[in-house]
Image 1 (cartoon, rainbow, N blue to C red):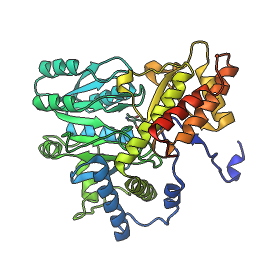
Image 2: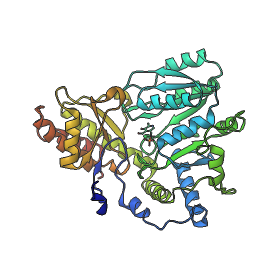
Image 3: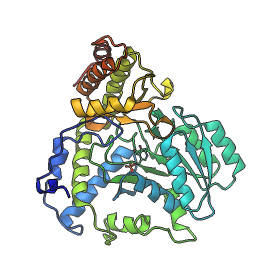
Image 4: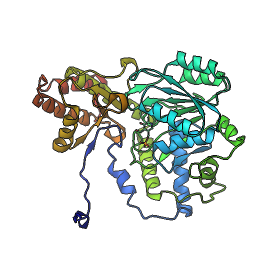
Length: 400
Ligand SMILES: Cc1ncc(COP(=O)(O)O)c(C=O)c1O
């Protein structure tokens, strides 16, 4: 057996430019070194209230039931489905990528008759097909939509889809794991019934918490369930009794340190301004896209629906995409992600999320890619992609 455990672990200081987690600001890391208090300590209750209040601002909601679930994003997906759905209900899930597939899988595991509305990867959800599915399935309980599909880089505009679902009496569950903090997400104005995210993407904290918000319609549906929620850990009523200021009933031991981290990352977002943060993600993404296309690379996403926090780019034919990622990591200390599902082995997913969404990071990854691709025999004009990004930043007013 290796004896390396005897040495204190020291993590390398990577530049995390993949699909998440993103690089965490030292202020957030510092918050995590605060002493651990008990989960029923009044001091911690104050931290919880502050986190909930800031989450309501980020989600643009007055929803009382807004809090972080002790889990990563997948736990929030399970929380949404297991509370809203009962065995035999119909759920319609729009699948335009890997996370739509996961949401449908979870709905199915909750015992729902799950209808898939598929659209090609790289495109948004198909509203015509959603309408057909709603007409064909009267009484549908839930429509699931992934706002920002992290496997393909596509953003699905939500307003028409939500309106459609509500006209057919269905609740709308929105996955905002990658969009919250980088694109506009307005839970109340857009009338979203359940919306969830994750700490490690554009909110800028480490992985481990998953904010979620339930509107009145969703709460009424949960209150009138005829069967018990089939999960203890993700049973909303139990979780909410702990987060509710007037109850504070123990449900499970809260991840104290993670909650400190989330408080600090949200505080940083409040200082920056939510709109300003969205603008920063847009500015940085425009520079990255300009640089990649100047290098002759093709983007995998429909140009009209491209995400800002994540750009998905096709690896050129003849270039070993995994080798490029390995060299980026080993020689440049930069992590980018490979493809998932249908896109496995074909694309790079370059994330500019949260603290990572900075002009300097665009320049670093472009310069490194130029060198690695040139070594792999791909024709590169050194500096061209960096110059294209610089021009884009100059047009948009670089603020790095
Ligand atoms: C859109 C989307 N939904 C859900 C998830 C699942 O989140 P997690 O990996 O934090 O469980 C992810 C993770 O990348 C995601 O991008």
